[in-house]
Amino acid sequence: MHPIATSLRNAYTSTFGEQPFIFRSPGRINIIGEHTDYNDGFVLPAAINKAVYIAIGPRIDGNISLFAVAYNESFNINLGDIAKTSRGWPNYILGVVHELQLRGHAPGGFNMVIDADLPVGAGLSSSAAIECATVFALNELFSLQLSKMDMIHIAQKAEHTFAGVMCGIMDQFASMFGRKGFVMKLDCRSMDFEYVPFDLSGIKILMLNTNVKHTLSSSEYNIRREECNKGISWVQEAYPEVLALRDVTEQMLDQQVRPRDKVIDNRCRYVVQEIERLQLACTDLLNNDLLSVGKKMLATHKGLQNMYGVSCRELDYLVDAVKNHPGVLGARMMGGGFGGCTINLVKEESVEEIISSLEKKYEEDMKLPLTAFTVEIENGTEKAGE
Image (tube, rainbow, N blue to C red):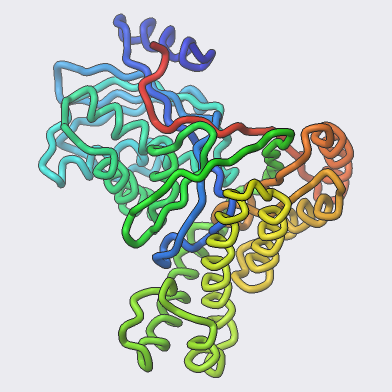
């Protein structure tokens, strides 16, 4: 059993006097395909071996009792009083309960203790992991008969309504459907997906955390959605069959968007190019050509930095520091932007040298600590500790 699962079980038992059920829901990485999900494009995520863990058990009354180990905080509420709270972290759980209630499901009261080895604010989608762990556990606990796809949509809607971030479907999908040894090519329009093998022989996935929190990410994320929608509306004037940037070509942008607004054109053009990059990267993976995948990751970072405008000084610093290193195949910022992690494909023998050479220099130049760790591709949300 994972050490966090063991400590959660002990904490739950000492608090509530009974044995809990344990569930884990992983964070995710995204190899390529950033900010394409809410534009009906494709994404290429994978679940990782860092996760949110919850210990949970039913109550005989209609109350919910939550405890977050990381914050050493409790939160209690009645099922009849579910509403957003200013406390922050309970909203991801309460949002799921609220969505279940709206859909006519009736989860009972429950106790929950929550902990994680998944860093918050690192772009690894800790919020989706909490939501997926919660809906998966409540489905098991109260026999709600939900499919995994139902659970994904409930978790996503909880993020929209209680966290206020109009996220696409990728984070929850990757957390729920992850499979060890594979990335998932997800069509965010049809929700069809396929597992694509990701052979990492001799290669490590190195995450470099800027330790910059996403202070702008929620507001700017929603602005980017609006900018994309504006571009689509201009394209639709000449091409009414277009539904999303998924359907748009660069020639359409040349005609309908670039003459009107260079910023909107950049936003839309990045997405159109990124959707094509992802398709080509999947062919690279099937050919086990990680060198070509790495080059496309660097191109993605350049697009996110210069066209989509969601990078930041610290992210650019880390990509620039490693991109010409002979042991690095590819590097880019990952996630919503404005902080969080860069994802790097690094030859196994170069990992320690890159970390040691970067740590001190980054702290001196950026006045922030650098947190470096490797991740492995793991299974999605599941019952743990059996």
